[in-house]
Image 1 (cartoon, rainbow, N blue to C red):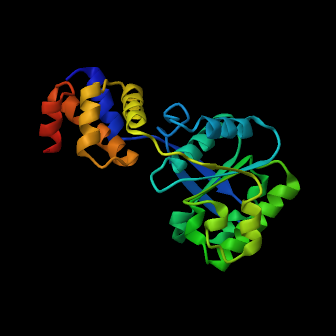
Image 2 (cartoon, rainbow, N blue to C red):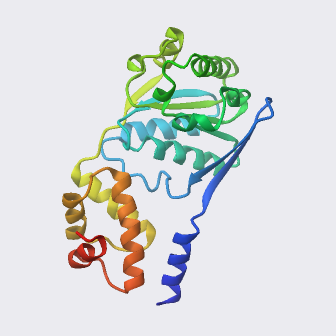
Image 3 (cartoon, helix red, strand yellow):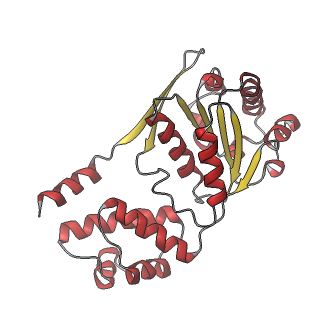
Length: 254
C-alpha cells in the first residue's frame, strides 16, 4: 500500500470537522461539529442555481437577511446550512447552527443572544411544530434579528411555512415574509454527477458505468449513495483494486 493510500485510510478513521462554539448571554455553550465535506464546492446544484445564488448573496451582504428553503428529508438542506456556516466561519465570523431534530440535546434558551451572530441557521423547523416554548423562542429570535438588522437568518423545513402546522400564527406569518425556495430534488443524471464530484474531491475516480450501476441497485437517497462511495473508496484502497462493477458487487455483496 502506498503512503498516499495510507494517508487516505487515516483520514477516514479520523475525520476532521468544523467546530462552532456558541456562547450566549444565558451562559449556554453549544459545541457543534459540522461535517467538513459539506461545503458549497461539494454541492451539486442540479436545478437549484437560483437558491444557491440567493444563499451566496445573503452571505455576501453586510446587513441582515432572511431566507427559508424546504425539501423532503435527505434533499440536501442540512448540507447547504453546513456550507453556509463553514463559509462564514472561514472568514472568522460567529455562526450558529441549531438542528431542531436534535432539540432534546438543548433547550429553547440556547437561542438567546443569537441575534448578535453573523449567521444563524435553524434546521428542520418542522420538528418543533406544536411545541409552544420552541415556537415562541424562534418567534422572539426572529423579531430580535429583524430589529437589530445585522444577522443572516437561514431556516429550513420539510414543507412551505404556511403548511408547517405551527400553533403560533404569528410565527407562521413571519416565516412566510422573506425569500422562500423549494430545494429541487436531483434527477438521476444529477445524482451521477454529484457522486462523481464527491469522488473527485475525495481523490478517486468513479467510472460512469459504476455510478449508473449504483443508482440502479441502491436506495437513491444521496446520503446512502455518498456513504456507499466512502465505503467503496476504503475497500478499493485496502484491496488495491480499481472501482469496477465486479469489484463493487463483491465489496457490497450485491
